[in-house]
Image 1 (cartoon, rainbow, N blue to C red):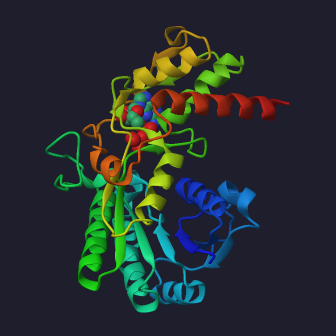
Image 2: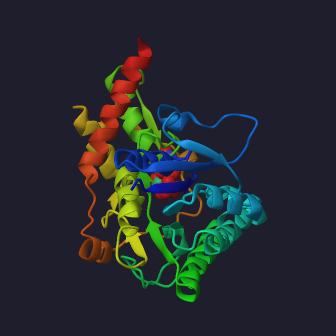
Length: 323
Ligand code: GDP
């Protein structure tokens, strides 16, 4: 029997990797896409003829019920949200509509139209905000510090409550920062791998960065989406942290990327106060003990491999596009 899955947020980084993974596993994949006047399908253009795009919006309950009744998916992955933290301060209500209430609408649509479907909710380490402990575990208290984190905390607890109250197979994966070549170069990881590749190819001669001491828990988006899938293949639903389990500083990242291309970063990197953050968040690091012990998951891309794979991608991309 062919299994089917509905992905919201198909056009984002995680949606595109998840669609690839499910297609490799012979799923029939549906992608919920909001209608917009400009196309936003660049990350999935290579999958366009393999994924069935369905039109709907997390703001519209009827559209969700129609889509779920029509597709009857075995698995539903909610990766859509208003996920840009600065925008959550200027548009807090819209953020709550998509990121919080959108999940209520989805859960209600599932319980009414397809209660046997397994549901994955993309929770975020932003729910911890200013945590009491480090590393954080699935039991660490939520203390979100921005409207995005608050909305994700609501969505998380609604998912847990629908699991308990309606007996749905509904799970939350609390993901930390995850990177890939499909992430924008405004994020520091990609900025550094692309910067090192450009300098190596003689296309730039310096890289300006902010706080080199900032630390993050980075893993590959491919690892994260594999964990999402694994969570829906179990005998019972549960919530898990999805992280690398280790932190690295921006300086370690720079050192690793430049080393990989045979350069000394100190010759090229300068610190520019323009890239400093006024309010640097507390450093978050996730404990992966539970997911490791119960689902036997661990990242296939440890830090060095993540860095080298992204530098390789940027070297090739820049070389191909130069020709
Ligand atoms: P996010 O803050 O986790 O969403 O992701 P970023 O990749 O934008 O930033 C990660 C960390 O890198 C933050 O603590 C920044 O202060 C630090 N950082 C240092 N230099 C830079 C830079 O040039 N650009 C960005 N975006 N972040 C930088």
